[in-house]
Length: 315
Image (cartoon, rainbow, N blue to C red; front, side, top):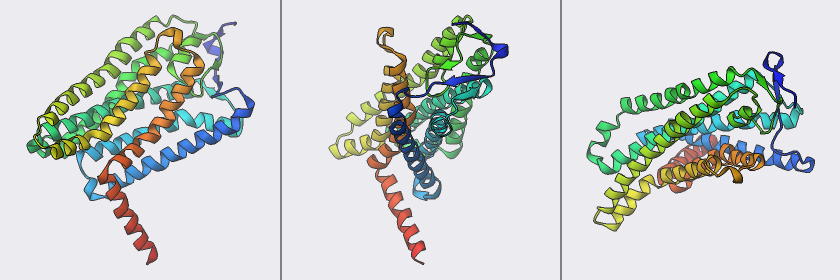
């Protein structure tokens, strides 16, 4: 295909989830349902964390941050697919495309870092419970959250600046349902070796593997401490306090590993789109549901606030 000079490029065409005409309406309804469920579930968690004094603890402070990130990731990645179905307009400006890549990758990196901070919180709570309120005070929690948010954006910035320097593309059509890094790299006719090296070193080993390693080490100590507890009731109670977080960590890292670390012979653009759809739509929807279904504190807070709302509405 003829190369397209970037000086003449003002937009890209986002291909979408599927080209099959008969699937357009079912896919739109499914994505819309998942997105609305994600918004409702995460907003509920966020409101409970803000309004219920019983949830004003470090663990739920980080959970509130995670809910904000889940809403942000879903909105950034799914809004184009939903708007395209309604308007029929698949075009997106170059600036908007690069901005979408920057925000999506930053929010994803932030989410991994917040999950790491949550694992440290569980480590202190179980392995050093007598000093928990001293170590995980409000100032430390706020500082940890700020570092996670700022570092996620700083970490992705060099990658986005390199993308902005691309001078030409082999096509204007992005075979995805939103602007993502890999599909856009495949379209570039420039030398992408520097960007690929940066993605491997910074994206894989620092932004992904380092949070995973810190989380893994935290849980090694957590599990070791739990196994040393004498009573079975104490072991169950200790494991219960981190079971929701552990479930989310396993779910997220399992999907990321399967999506990005499969052998090239098993990778197709269509399968990658489906995995991206699961990561950007289903996982943010499942996170608050996992915490709601597996956490007695959240369920109790939901009942208290719902009862309070019913009482006020009757008045």
